[in-house]
Image (tube, rainbow, N blue to C red; front, side, top):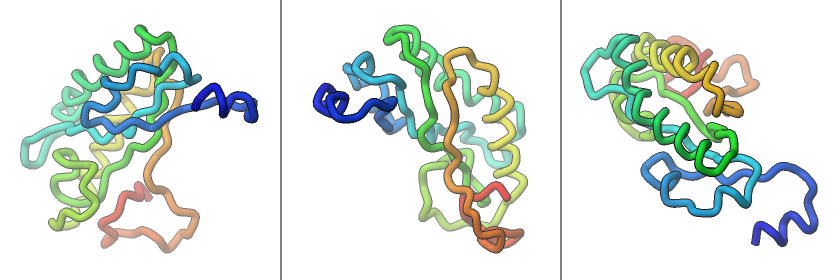
Length: 149
């Protein structure tokens, strides 16, 4: 299928694998230009985690992604990454239906930990933040969505 797409499309190709293990089970990353990961990794299971806790939570996911990049000689693009502004977002960032109190501080720390930990990694080809809307009113102090605004 990838060869067929390349026959009609000259751009770069990426596949977005889930961070629940799918990224390690794809065996054809070398057929693409990038390794894509929807990087909703748990950063901490502690209540009220600190910035240091969340940075430490990136250790294992970074090993996975750096290993994939080295094995397949491709940069990794985080095809989706984001944290909801609610209590527990570092524990289950993939869960868009979880109900808890709004916690913009935990969201802030999760975004900061991610940016500071991953920004200069040589294997990282980029990040697509989920979801930053163009509408300036689609956010605010009571918003429990993913927007970091």
